[in-house]
Image: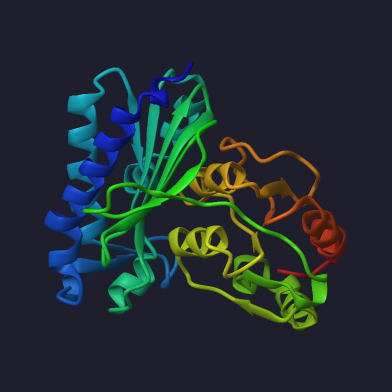
Length: 287
């Protein structure tokens, strides 16, 4: 039995995230000053005052209610990447993405969210995908399904993925710019094989759209734990599938490679074959 088989613990996490969004994120939305935004590793890899304030608020609340837990926020890890080394052995850990989709947030686009993953010994046991703008969420607990909820409703709605249709009619979520420059042109051209391929610049909303059946697959060239651990659990609980392109099962400890998710196993297998070339060595001179 995991600690988060207790639904009260999950409900408390929702309260903590909602409170931080109300006090630290939404008051800053479309009100950021130039000095409130800075670049981290690249000009489009941003952090804002909202990210830092929300992460601090959630971290303090979680530490108060779960004093035995390891708490890792994206911005804390950006300052000290060695913090991630503690995750596999932690009996209980929280991984926070305080504003997922920071570029959108800073640009005044409402496609951003908060992601919270709860882990035990490196395995995800709870995932929360929260939309601060509309104040609703997807909550998944290991072995208990994935559920869509919002305040004031007497019960949450269970999410269950359905499958069917050819690969050519499938819709997907892929960002070619997540991949090295030498692979981007070929990948972008390959995406025309499908009915529609989009990207949100926000893992929270991309996983939510996959869970609601708006898209059938997703491919990511980055495997940051705060972006994927909660969403992969939610997909599994809703009947979906995931795999690294090199054939490994996805685990939150994986820090490199390409992650593929889909609503059914047949689609996942077909897409794994089609995108397998992304695992091949790049020609000499490619970036």
